Image (cartoon, rainbow, N blue to C red):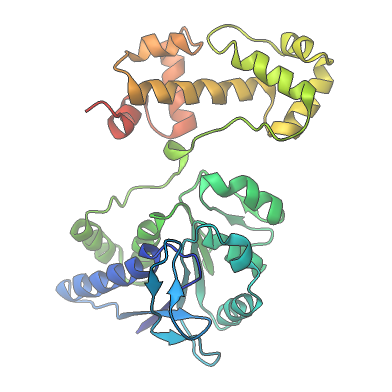
Length: 322
């Protein structure tokens, strides 16, 4: 038997609590059909007695309160919305997770639930992922963690982190393969109509221009670059627009935005191209030129390197023109 605890937390996304139970029950059924029942035994637990309120005020009823003497093989921390600071500062939860980890449990977390996992210290100096929109806040709070928000899943053996809310499906399929078998996971994916091939968050990431850094000169450079997406840009010209020397702009721009001015332009151009692919039927050659790339072949290669998809694949997945 593989004992699994799904930890219900205040502000949780209810589907990321109940959903894993469905996946592991389906895995047991698939395993029996294949002649090898993995024996997943999943239950919802909570730190305190009584129902737990989800972020949209749905009561989640745990099956038991955590027992300090119980031992689990897998702990799953669900997605949380709007309560990351309160949840990650729950000392009782942190201590319980560390105790379970010390007894050999694989501790897993989804989306903002990774904040609580990071609070245990188990990710210090190690790789992890979380929802791409939470990356900046996560880096500020947990600077010792090597955050890789472009990944959908990061498995370090004893700890596993996953990206956005629905990544609980990817996580559970991964665990079904790891603790059951790849054949069981493949059968579950087919039964539940889940794409087992997702590996990256990159196609979903929306890059927004950081504005709250407080450096007025860098803001001037940002505006200058943003107004020239379709044309040539250079570091000396951007520095002149900011009223700074080239080296000074490079240093301050990187500190304020995390990018060099030229890589910042690439991010903006790719983001503009994504919007055009989503909302227009324009050819790749046409939209590439409109965001500053005369060579459509180079644009295609750059687009795939940045998003993990070709322009055609991106349009097929995200176009609103149906």
